[in-house]
Amino acid sequence: MASLTLEEIETMLDDMKKKLNVVNASVITSDSVSPAKHDDLIALHAHVMRSPSFSISEMDEIVQELGQLRGRKS
Image 1 (cartoon, helix red, strand yellow):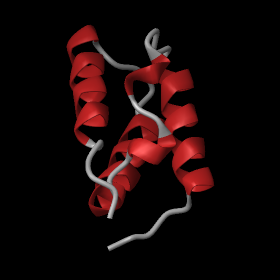
Image 2 (cartoon, helix red, strand yellow):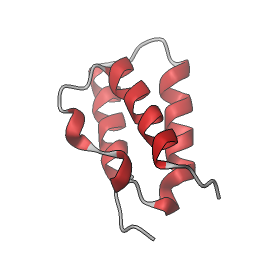
Image 3 (tube, rainbow, N blue to C red):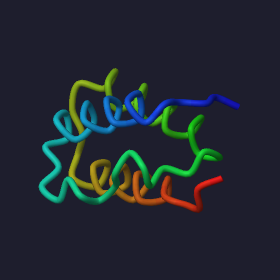
Image 4 (cartoon, helix red, strand yellow):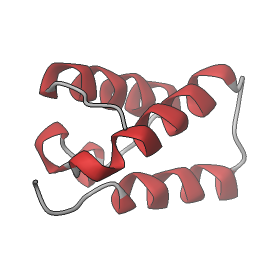
């Protein structure tokens, strides 16, 4: 299981928000990412950054996945 710093999480989230042109950037914050979800964040970031573009439905799914990264802090 990966362990990320808040700065690393924030950088990944900022990268994805910029690439996706997320209007509601407050959908997730670096301190709300559950430590148990760090591996999921890494995988989602890699997917978003390597894809050249996204359909509306893909963007909706990605934003939903970002929302699912929230959880209890451990």
